[in-house]
Length: 270
Length: 78
Image (cartoon, rainbow over all chains, first blue to last red; front, side, top):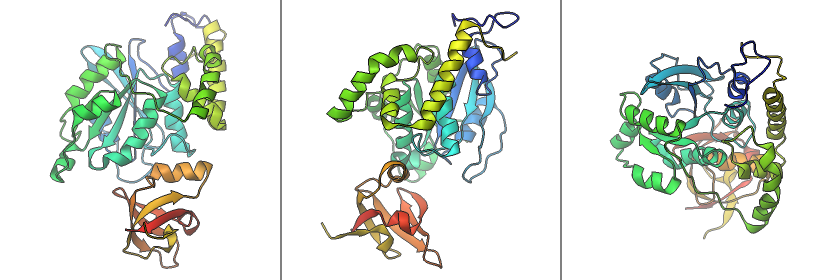
């Protein structure tokens, strides 16, 4: 927030706002908190989106329904939130177009928090994505949706234990009926405002990988200044992977950040 | 432990368990993301009329795999 863009007429836009505008995120005010909504396909992401924002985005039960991100707003405790609905994905590590949209936004769109919606009826399947997001950023709220359907099937989920093990807030919801949405907004507020600091335990890799990561970390620190929510360990892992699409996005984002920070950005949101 | 064989050879209706993935890189990642982790139970649901692809039930979701993909997933009879 300290870095202001000097090329704007008012000089009032922060680097955050400029960088987010690259991902089509248009904030009404700078106070507005940007929240990303991620999850596997068909877990009820769009239903959660609609019940939070009061919008009526079209939902349908087929893959790839949400192609680009939709956005909506809501107010909680007088704090404005901008919710970005991402395409449903099973993973952030393979390279389909949908996955890349979701991943790039979580990495470079600078969300103040990310909600990962998971399906209570098949938790194991969904935790894959949740763990991947939690490795990228700690600012995660887990929304265990379709909890009513799970109950019908006799599945009981111990949300407290799940939250303890994962180190992030976990809320059970049935978005269709509105159950759990108030609690979801409460923890979201806490995480986005910095009152709650989730601490997912770091993923352990074998010694060889670990020492390679440790060698990279000191050099990565200064490069990731513009991406405070991004876990440097995870970026180091992508470097070791030789994940080219990610590295391209990272380079591009870093250049844009430098320019924005120096006030050399000709193209502003306004 | 029974004998291991490729998933594509499992007959329709059978339940098998994943023992190993003989894949590298992107393809391996894909299979793991789908939920084909060693130890996972897979049910063969149906095979398309020309024999390829085949539908499998993996962790509560139906997933279609081609023969060349399924041939690299090793399983054992439950």
